[in-house]
Structures are given as C-alpha cells and as structure tokens.
Length: 191
Image (tube, rainbow, N blue to C red):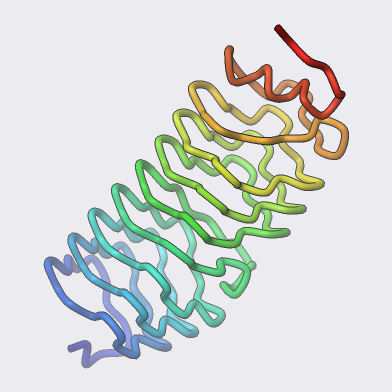
C-alpha cells in the first residue's frame, strides 16, 4: 500500500486498491496501468499530469480531489460525481473510456476530449463543453440542458438528444443521419 504523502514520475501497475483510502496523497507525472480503484476514497488527493490506462475508477469518492491535466485511456469511470472534485483548474481527457452514470453538471470542461467513450446516462447540464470532442461517443440518455456546446464535435456520435433551443450549439459539428435528431425538438417529422 502507499506509504508516502507524494509520488513523482512513478508507474503503478496491476494493483488492487479497491475500497482503499488514498486520501490526501499527491501524484505528479505518474502512470497508473491496470490499477483497480473501485470504491476507493480519493478525497483531497491531487493528480497532476498523470495518465491512467486500462484502470477501473468506478464509484470512487472524489471528495475535493484535484485532477489537473489527467488523461484516461480505456478506463472505467462509472458512477463518478465529478462535481465533487476540486473545480479549480480541473482538467482531464478521456479516450475510449466508460463514463456511464457520471455527473459533470456545471463544470468548465471547454476543450475536453471524450472521443470514443461511452457516456450513457451522464449528466452534463449547465456545463461549458465548448470545443469539446464527443466524436464516436455513445450518448444514450445523456442529459444536455443549458450547455455551451459551441464548436463541439459530435462526428460519428450516436444516440444524443440535444435541444438546440436551450443549448448554445453555434459551429458545433454533427453528421448525418444522427443530426436529424436535432429536429425532433421543433416538432418536425421526417419521412
């Protein structure tokens, strides 16, 4: 188990930290490969420029955890309330991750990449998602309400329901046939 208060440029691989208390520890430029954090307590921990690959962070307790320039690739992050993280300089990117049932409401996420991820039933309400990348994402049941989606990418994304009347979508990129779903909010029937 962890016995120091800070770690720098270390690699943690194939470890089971599920249910562990990893509170108040600082990680800088660390890599986590195949680490199981399921139900871990990350309260007040800090992750600066860390990368996570093939790791499971489902149902972690983020209690004011700070994530700055964190990258997640092929990770499970199911059921995380990211609004409980320290919002100051929050920054993360997600590539081919499973983020189902998570909450990003009202966060400043401009320019965030979610490319290739599963975002089923995720709450994005009132978040700044301008210039974010949702390419090839599964957005079934995701909630977009009063969002800034200007210049966001939704190419090859599927199952989204975005109301153009209560979201800012100028210069956002969509492709067919999924873009037709935007018309459903106008009461238009096609076919």
